[in-house]
Each structure stands twice: as C-alpha cells, then as structure tokens.
Length: 194
Ligand code: IMP
Image (cartoon, rainbow, N blue to C red; front, top):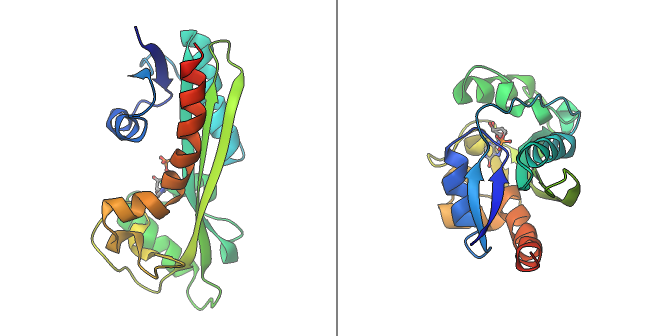
C-alpha cells in the first residue's frame, strides 16, 4: 500500500496540481481534512509553508507537504509579498493596485518566490525548499493565460509575461516549476525509504 502524503491546503485544485507535479513519487496524495484550521501567522513565505506542513502532519500523523508563494517587487520593499493573494479583492484589482503603486517608478524589478515544506509524521520539518523567478513589472498587462499577476510579470530571459507562456514553458521557468524540480528527487528518496 502506498504511504500517504497530506497536502496542507483546503483548495481542491491543489490535488490535481500536485498529482501532476509529483507523479513520479510513490505516495497517495490526500487533501487535509476540513476540520484543521491553520492561521498563517508567519512573517515569511517559508514560515507559512512550514506552519502548514507541520500542523497538518502532526494532526494526521503522516507526512504533509505545503507551499506558499507570491510576488515581491523591489521598489515596493518586497510588497505585495506574503499578502499577494489579499492585496485587493480580485486579480484585476490586485494588478491595478500594483500598477498604480509603481506609477512613475523606473525600477520595475520583481521576483516570484515559492517555498515548499515537507514535515514528517511527528511534525518535524524534513524538507524546506525555496525557488525564485526574476523579471520586471510591465506598465500594462500583456497576454491571456495564467492567473494572478501573470499578465504584468515579464520573465527576465524570455521577455515574455507568464500570461504569454504556454503551461509547459511556465512550468519550466516559474518559481513553482523550479521548486518542484528540487522537491521531487527529495520526496522520491523519502518515500522509497518508508
Ligand atoms: P499561493 O501561495 O500559491 O496561493 O499564491 C499566493 C498568491 O500569489 C496568489 O493568489 C497570486 O496572487 C500570487 N501568485 C503566486 N504564484 C503566482 C503565479 O505563478 N502567477 C501569478 N500570481 C501568482
């Protein structure tokens, strides 16, 4: 029987995302039960990913994986940062807010960051991975794919926005894709030993 890996999230979409991402890992992915309430009280992406993974693993007495990601803009001292998903009411408003805060500012450097943490069945952090994707914030949106801040984030090397990329290209270059490629070999090791 396959060992369980809980996904520390209540978002049902995460199951599909992780199933695709971790298809080479010998584990059964299960979404955390609804009764677990976690307050993301950390000051960093890593803290929040660690809090989620450790809480769920301790409560479920199984391995758990969690991620936390967002957009950090240099000229805004790292904002929206850990507040990326709550920066305004919806994606369009969030983009509007970022563009207005950057009005007249020449330095448009920004990066997406993803932290992924895995905790053991006793709630101990066993894996802590960070990956970044660097680029610039455009003056206006470009492209129709993706979600969140994708249309205003131009990746440094390709000069394409995330919203102009195919899913495959974004998976290769994005913070999330890079984090996944670091996580997979580690998880394969963990799940082959138990
Ligand atoms: P989460 O931690 O993956 O839920 O991401 C938090 C928030 O960061 C999202 O709601 C988006 O606003 C933003 N974000 C994270 N990753 C991306 C991305 O790849 N493209 C666009 N926005 C993102």
